[in-house]
Length: 102
Image (cartoon, rainbow, N blue to C red; front, side, top):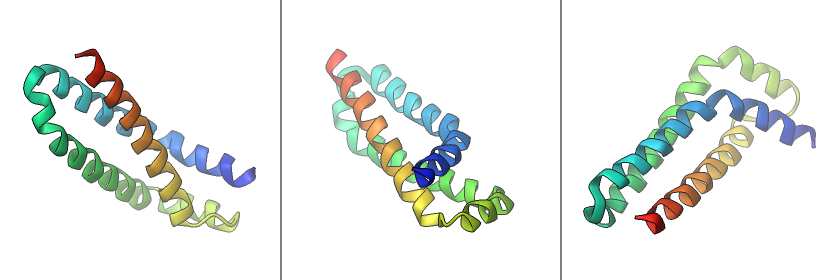
């Protein structure tokens, strides 16, 4: 349970940029209208690449804070993988919902 709390604390610091990327994907999908289904692969890779860039930036700029997590037994991978999977599933759910409404 402590590990989950630490992961959620780390994710709260990168939630806003990740959510803005998700909203930009949904907006682009909405603005392209009927052509958006052809661009779904581009939106997918856009999300994956920005997810990796945001995680790398967070690791780079929160280097001192990572010692806090490592001292409590949580590695970079334990922070990165669950937050990335959760954010991708959140994007997928929002994107599928947006696709059905168009």
